[in-house]
Length: 252
Image 1 (tube, rainbow, N blue to C red):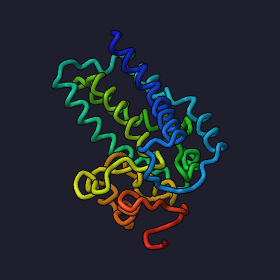
Image 2 (cartoon, rainbow, N blue to C red; image 1 turned 135 degrees about the vertical axis):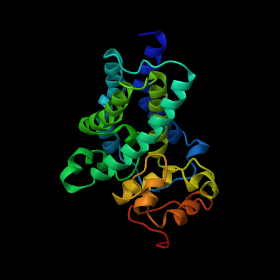
Image 3 (cartoon, one colour; image 1 turned 30 degrees about the vertical axis):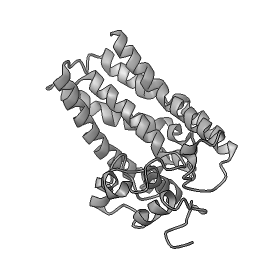
Image 4 (cartoon, rainbow, N blue to C red; image 1 turned 90 degrees about the vertical axis):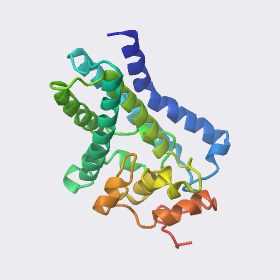
């Protein structure tokens, strides 16, 4: 274990809370970044308190990654191993997140994901509010296949760690109640990548828009909300937020 290993693990353990604190300050102080509100609805302290309690075990990402490292996995070195690991991990993460996320909306498995979905309206702390079971399943689903690959092809710890950092950032951005991307985003990068509005619709409507960072699998399997493209400019270009959790394009 080197100092770099410990630094990466410390960042992974604390980044979710750090970003949640940033969004909390942004809202409280009415920073310009918060102007394009997605849902103009009150955020209740009771919900935020519950989410903070749920976030106590957020460092499990770092704990499990440390466990695999101590067990002798992810010792691949060099820039090529890092890049290949990062790309492969990102691709697997998109597949695993979509598959497991959609599966957890099946009645028999929904108990795993139900705690996270108690938040129909996203707050600064929703991104770190998951049940312990869901965090454990998601992390093991990420790390066990990578460890299996590592038995044959060296996997880079730094590549995996960088993916986790990127995931925590994307997850935090996805759960804010304000849109960060520009009005014309869906004309270029947004044709493939998700936005905060994209995931906000998943929470408010409880289904659809299951993707982590991309729209690819939602489009492939027909689980994308069809009015998303219409709602996005309403929120970003016209700065007209939604006023009901079940509101759809054209309701207003």
